[in-house]
Image 1 (cartoon, rainbow, N blue to C red):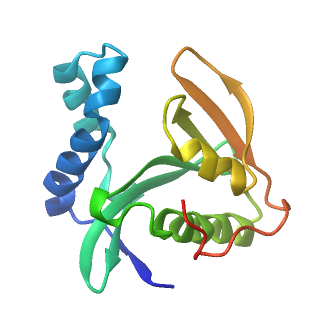
Image 2 (cartoon, rainbow, N blue to C red):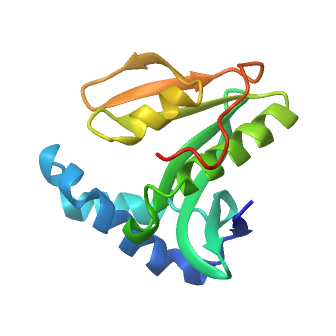
Length: 155
């Protein structure tokens, strides 16, 4: 594995918030969300115990947030800095999470904004849409699903 996931510390909040809002700005605008309310909600939802930092050669390049929900590993957030996107890092991190869920005998679930290009990645990794709402698709991957992709896949 090229990347390492390390536990988040409270001082990682500012980095995570900056990356989150840089990556989500267009989505917030497109969905006509109240940015101030979204920022306040982000602070409440960001829980260091659920967050891990994605590092490469000791430097933070992204973060993710997971929790157990309905006996499944739920991926709440996954962000990789733009300079490191489309290099297989998202696939590598997702494969790590899929292995975690499999080891725990759990399915893995997530919600993805309908316009997010990561939807293709999740489908390739064996996630299936279970339902949707106005903004998101909700997806699930059973722990016994076919083998996941190698980290060198580009997406």
